Image (cartoon, rainbow, N blue to C red):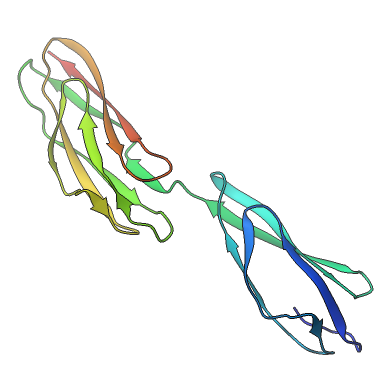
Length: 178
């Protein structure tokens, strides 16, 4: 904030809108003419996608309130990709090549813990680099195979449960027995 006026500016209040918070405020109760001060603002998403908001400064200026526009982007904290996988057509009893899925931890400052991986249907985990925890911005892979037990279409789910707010993460699995 900059006081562009010739008089001391009296600061009454600094109020952020929902999803934003004041993390630091070096402005104090007054700001001398031509004086500058800074506030820090943090963002915590309550939804996916772009989130907009404001910080409102109430003070003794002629207009009494200055509003600064803010925006942030809410992301899914943990993602399992791709969201689905077709493991193809295979003879009954013959195991497919593995399809690789990736688990990514984008939680802000939080390690992912309590990771448990499972599949349903005629699908199996053939290998994984995932352990019971995953660091911030970390990723690991899960290889899934398909062994049809009968002819026709088969469906299943790859599921990862963990400590994230969007647990479990799932990917739909399909394949065809011949």
